[in-house]
Length: 257
Image 1 (cartoon, helix red, strand yellow):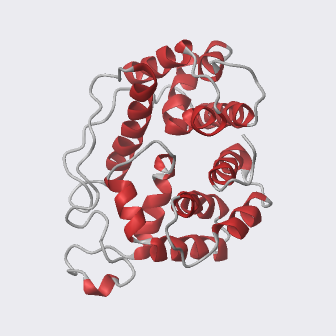
Image 2 (image 1 turned 60 degrees about the vertical axis):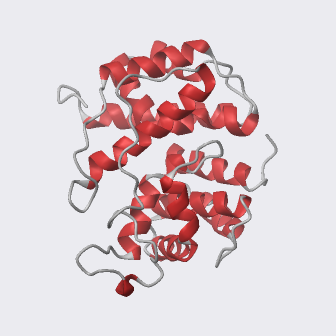
């Protein structure tokens, strides 16, 4: 993001776009939500950055509520990749930094859904190295001690990382991240519960989105995600948490599209 703009401008714009996506998910707010967000913004560049921050969740109304995907939205999403080119990722964590690796997977999700709607995707978007390789996401996170101590990561850190990848927890996306989630429901349940106990409700809701998706797929879980979602959405937390909760509720069939 540009250092010429205060971070608050990006945060506010991302929150505004999350509200638009939430409205569209509920069947209000009209069409071309992404294009209108940029067109009506006081700072269009910050609004384009918001498109990248909200990421694949801008497709939630199309995937979960049968909303139409507007060609103007496709153009703006593509423009956001031009204005803010994807960062290169040399290696996944722990060899490389986690932040660009997470951003690359989030960009992959956005580009994949864009391609599914338009048949094209922005240039330069490649899936990062699969997270199930090496130490990226351990196969047996329920027993981290069984992993090679030089490569294993704890279930606490893994679950937080999966929370950061929550925009991938949407129907219509399939990949190594989803495979890793299906292999470790106990670690996800532990991570969500730990975040609740720490009163970190946004992180808890992001991790719970994975539990909701696994539940919808019929994966046996160590906890019921429905009470967790209903509990978390009552705590507020701003537009981002509200959007995460609404997506989880629709995935679980708790809200009619």
